[in-house]
Image (cartoon, rainbow, N blue to C red):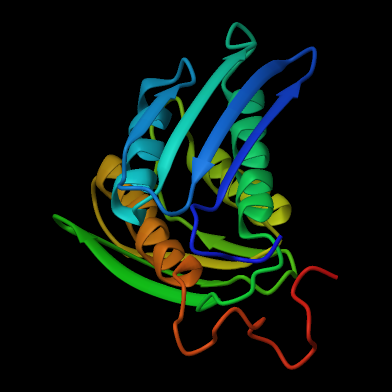
Length: 201
């Protein structure tokens, strides 16, 4: 699927014994989000991702929260990454790389992305998170997203005292970097931005 003048959209579902997840992602939206995961803090972070990235996102999940939040966060991140990969098609005409450094009050986070087709993630998130989204789970969320999105992702919290602020800075920086990376580059005229000729193989 080559990037065209129309919206780049993907709709996917993932159903297991642990979670049932449905996602619709429009990369050329206006930042509208409807997110229901059963984890209010995670909903808030995904809303930040859509709003500051300029994506339209609908994501609903019913997970085994009676166990804990791990499966819900992991499976939402996996399906969101998969939706990104599908919506990008052959990745023709995109800027491919993006980076952002975003403050949230006393906290500062930076994110760099390469939509390279090569899954890799380095996540140094400090104490970012909440009781429902621990720093370890936040890092795993980012790793899962990068794996299914087939992208290289580097995330670092530079400093901060408040865990919520650190996490929000991470998701806002992720949103801005990803928004830049998926943006169409008029100079490329639909060509795939790599000397290999493909970003999907």
